[in-house]
Image (cartoon, rainbow, N blue to C red; front, side, top):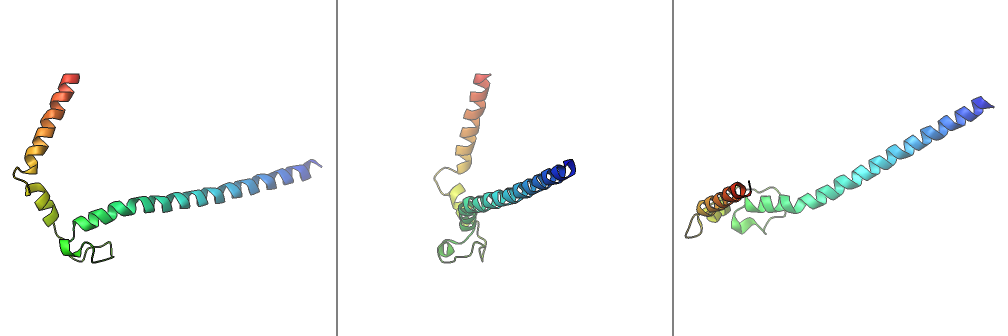
Length: 102
C-alpha cells in the first residue's frame, strides 16, 4: 500500500515539475517576444540615424545599405552655437547642483 502511494506521489510530483518547466518556457518565450517588439523602434531609429536622408523611408530593411554620420554632424554643428557649448553648460550646472546638495 505504501509503495503504491509513494509511486503515485512521485508521478504527481514529476508531472507537476514537467508542467512547471513547460509553463516557464512559454512565459520566457512570450517575454522574449515582447522584448523584441519593444526594442524594434529603438533599433529602427538607430538604423535611420545612420542612413542618408533620402534613404530613411525608402528602404524597409533595418540594416542601412550605406552608413552616413551626416545627421550626427548636423546635430552637433548645425546651430549657431556648437552642441558642445550646450553640453558643457549642462555639465557645469549638474556639477554645481551636486556640490550644492552635498
